[in-house]
Image 1 (cartoon, helix red, strand yellow):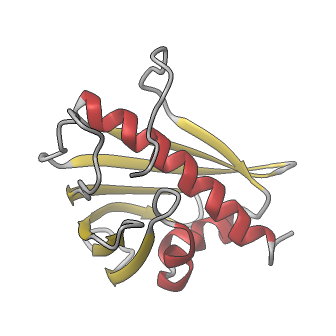
Image 2 (image 1 turned 45 degrees about the vertical axis):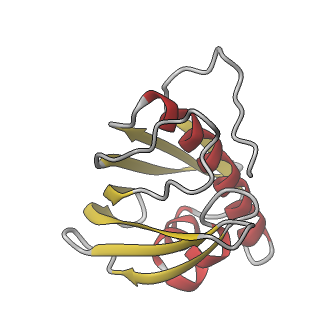
Length: 160
């Protein structure tokens, strides 16, 4: 099982991460299937894009596979696509694999907003994931942080 532990003082707030790449490169990493497959998901997970139509009203579906080989689907719809500044998508189906004991699965849809802002160091990515139950919110924060780190590693090979 993946370690999703967080300190108890963690509060709901945007996750901000600076990636050493241009806003266009970082944005593309969110909407080009082969790039998404290289970084999306918590450490130890692999991901396969089943569908990704990055336009307002376009759908996405990802198959996420845990280290133990179990898979689940994460799917939803894009609400706003403003290249290279902002993405907003609603997640209808969450991947509830290998949740820590006692963690309530996320059954309702949630909303993710990702803002990309150029800086002298690259691109500041600000991600806000709302409408999550309290247990799942903590897991999502860890998963997003791990994913953004993986994305930066992927992009640093070819960027800036």
